[in-house]
Length: 82
Image (cartoon, rainbow, N blue to C red; front, side, top):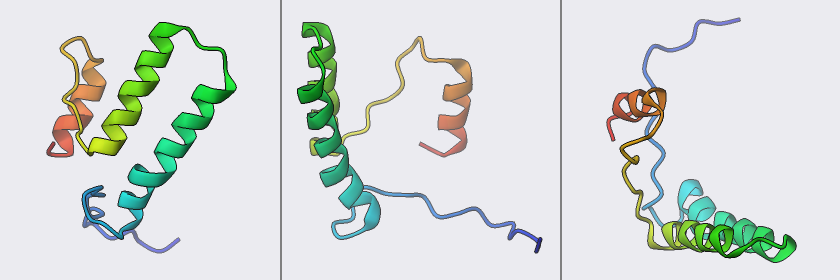
């Protein structure tokens, strides 16, 4: 196997209209979230969570990790430079 380049891959951004990440976040994810919501008999709490996830995709806002997030997730988040 050839050597892997040492440079890291570019950051995937969702705020560039016409880019693959933007299309996934703005179109594909919301469609999947809607399908999931329509396909399963979720209760009010799960429906609110799905609605919040859908709003997050639509608004393009990435919320910070909650204070009680897994420390490994927090380390990855920091390593990505977010």
